[in-house]
Length: 375
Image 1: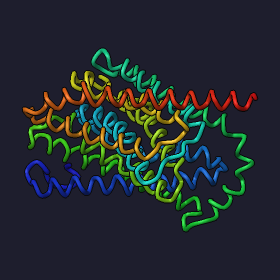
Image 2 (image 1 turned 90 degrees about the vertical axis):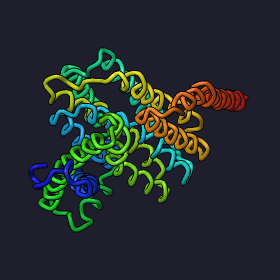
Image 3 (image 1 turned 180 degrees about the vertical axis):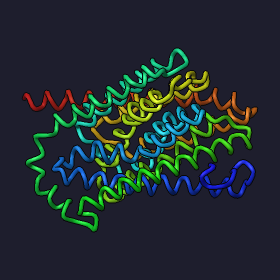
Image 4 (image 1 turned 90 degrees about the horizontal axis):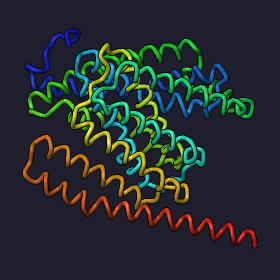
């Protein structure tokens, strides 16, 4: 915080202002970066499908990247890990939950068959890497290499659509005040600057918050920082749901989650000499929750390729319960044991039974439809 001339740990009011200013810079920086990068991609004739799956989804994860790398370099690895894990949990439970409550989300078949299983597989891989208590530099390099392979796979898969999308590309490039490449480069540069500055302010103030409140940096990263850096995804998905662009709402979340694990966590571990340490609390609770949330997407998206309102409500309720648990845990509250007992012995088994029943009903309906079509 030397660059702003004050210490937030000494000035509580300035600490709050710094935190808010950091969030604002992150959101604005991400918006400008996405806009500039998207226009540049269109200028080079890249398919809108590729832009949507990569630049838009990954661009909204730029705050997570900036915060996590800053956290690792400044010695606050708990914030870095908590930010990634918390953002992935929030993306599915909070963002998809709210989006589905606005309007049932129809899911593209490619996302169901490809991107969601990839998200689940990568979540398992990260959990396995963290099992020894650290995501090492070599683990991070592996994640980054997988990200490169994933991008190459997407490009190869969709390049046949470039000619079909040529009219859309030309229309996109010709529209807006930033149609010239110099304006696009300026947007990218300013967006990156705002992201880096916002991340510095956010991490510094978040750590000061944790110290003042007696809360661990991991909990702050899992909650306040995670939701704050997920604001671009929240804005993008909710706006898409309101406008009826429901496939975008889901694609943005799934793409962002993949990038958070492969890109954000991978780069953070790669730039750190000692990797990213994994606390016992993260290994025994938060990472398993992240894997379980990714797994929960499989039957819900599989059942009719849509997320119904009741399923969105279930996601949102679980996010509220997860947040309550973190708060009780941080405060070592007396109600923690009772809350955990109710969740693990009643709520979770009922939810699992419901998901199994929904999936079984969908499978029976599909078999009945196939038999009907044969006759």
